[in-house]
Image (cartoon, rainbow, N blue to C red; front, side):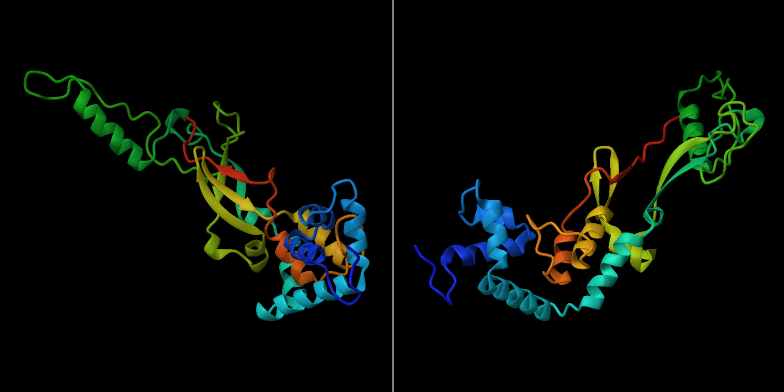
Length: 250
């Protein structure tokens, strides 16, 4: 069916709907019903047509106005994602091992651990006829283990190397940049998974908007940054999340 000048066809309307989801012209063309073999060419051609480009711009402007988004706000968000220090969210530290500061470098308890072990010992230890314990509780390296301390360079067990511990930060105290990078947290079988938005995606989207790079096959670099950042916020870097293990290796 030939196109009516001055009016979008139903397939073009569908193309615009799909394009505004992820800004991928090729995939939008496929989802709109165009042939997969020609979708790349059709997608690029559609974005170059004045009627389609005008409608895309109109919808973007309407969406930005509805959500009260400004270019400065969006640029600040992207800038935060790009420049944020991931260590504000999660850190991998080398800390003291259980023997570093124990008496005679023996295994050192925390106060709570000693109390628990002492209770277990009292229940299981042998007693004499009068009910008195016939064994002595092993204090080992004493009490005072604090995994926040640095490794002891003289420790004969870890040789001053310490052990690896992952620390998750309090997200209530994040800087604006780190808050932009933070994508949430979820509980897995292995512990807590701290999720982060993709810095790589944010850099690419910002560069496309600024005209530093151009991918005419998939992205219209003239699309407003409001839509670009909306798309980037949905992207999570699969190989970036860090898992927090709560169970300490002993």
